[in-house]
Length: 254
Image (tube, rainbow, N blue to C red; front, side):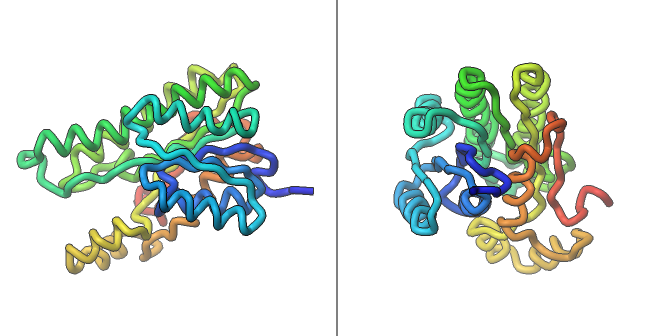
């Protein structure tokens, strides 16, 4: 008998090809979920799905870009057509954009960040909620950032987009609270990933600085963020909706 935190739940993970998304797929599968993965890089998705199946999990994937509405719809349809329903979704897909002062920021950077982080989330929420309404409800966790709660220097579009993620979370939570759908957000601090490694590598001293302003004095592991998302998606948080959970080593608590 499967007794994991997400036992018998069909869970969609966006941005699943690396970083927090890939870690979430592994954590969710370990907790008993059937996982449906979506991202733009098919080779990464295929490798991850195969690895999960080798460990005894049920996994499928749909290649897609969340900025394309049809791709977001197709990812949900893969879950519903293959497994009969969508119980939960972790909307993790997002990008950071350039670290540039606002007065030097290009329109193209603003457009790209907002299109992925906000419009992409809107596409996913719309498709996921429609499916959940047809099958009795569900749970959704959106990946914001500490940048959705406080300012981050030289990252205005990213900060704006992650504040918008929290706004969409609260709007959806309020709108569907009586229809069996809970919607929450997590706000990770700096988390170890390929992007973070590149960011630190191009900016000597930055990793040390980030650690110095984080009370726990370290960077998060992606699995630590995924564990928080798993709890919010599970039936262990039944009266929680519209919440934003910082997972940041105490950064926004200062």
